[in-house]
Length: 323
Ligand code: FDA
Image (cartoon, rainbow, N blue to C red; front, side, top):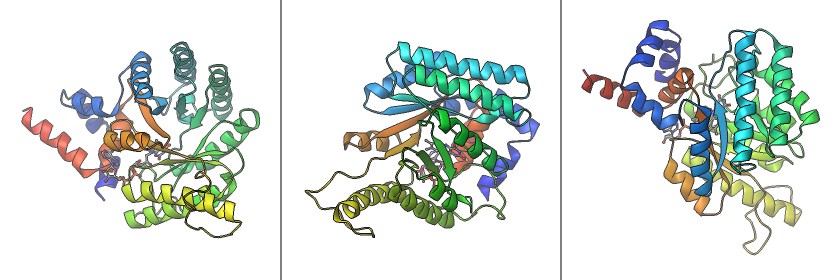
C-alpha cells in the first residue's frame, strides 16, 4: 500500500518540485545513481568491472516528450557505447534502455528506428542492449519491438515482470534458444486486474516464471535482491543441469561431480545489497549491476524509495533533520 501511495504521489508536480530541489535529496540520489553525466556512468562501470562484476548502464530519461528529446536520448546512448568501447569496458558492460525515452508513446516507428540504431552501435562496440519493461499499458508494444530487434540483433535482451498475471505465458514464449530474458518483480503501480498485488503472490509468480526460464533454452537474467529467490535461482540452475544430464523430465539435485549448472546471471541495482553482489561474484557467479546515470533521475529515485519503507524513512528523517 505504501508503495502504491508513493508511486501515486510521485506524479504530483508539487511533490516532484519539492523532492527535486531539496538539498537532502542529493545524498539519496547518490546512493542509487552513478552521476548526472555519461562519464560518471563509465567511471562507475569501470570500478565495478575491476571488482569482478558486470554492468548494465542505463541513461535516465524515460518519457521523452518530443522528437528532439528522443533523438538526443539515442545520441547519448551512441556516445556512451563509444566511450565504453574506448575504455575497454565492453563486453562486460551492456546498456539498458527504455523505449519511452525514444518516443514510443507518441511515435512508435521513431522509437523503433532509434532502438535499431542503438543496437547497431552496441554491436559495433562489442556489446548489446537490454530493453527495460515499463508500465503494463506498454508491455505488448515493447515485446513486439524487442522481437523485431531480435530478428537483426538476436543478442538483444527483453524484460518481464513477475507481478503481471500474463508473465508466465510470456516466459514460455521468450525462453527460446539465445533469448536473453531478465526476470524482475516489477516496479510500477499496477491495478489488480492485471497484476498480483500481494508481495507473497508476486514472489510465488517470480518462482514459477524462474522455473520456466531455467528449464528453457535461453539465458535467464535473474534480477532480484530477494534472498529466497537468489537462493532458488542457484538451486534451479543446478537442478536443471542435473535433469538434462540424467535425461529426466523433472528437477533433480545435481550430481556433485556432474555437469556445470546451466548458464544464467544474477542482476542487482546499483546501491542495493552491494555486499551480496560481491559475495555472489566471489563465489564464481556472474553478477551484473544495473547502473543508472543522467539528470532525469526523479522517476527512478521514486521507484527505489517506493520499493522499501526503510528508504523512504531514511529520506524523511534526513528531511526533518535538515530543517
Ligand atoms: P523486494 O522488493 O522484495 O526486495 C527484496 C530485498 O531487497 C529487500 O528486502 C531489501 O533488502 C532489498 N531491496 C530491494 N529493493 C531495494 C531498494 N530500492 N533499496 C534498498 N534495498 C532494497 N522493474 C521494472 O518494472 N522494469 C525493469 O525493466 C526493471 N529492471 C530491473 C533491472 C534490474 C537489474 C533489477 C535488479 C531490477 C529491475 N527492476 C525493473 C526493478 C524490479 O522490478 C523491482 O522493483 C526491484 O528489483 C525490487 O524487487 P526485488 O526483487 O529486489 O524484491
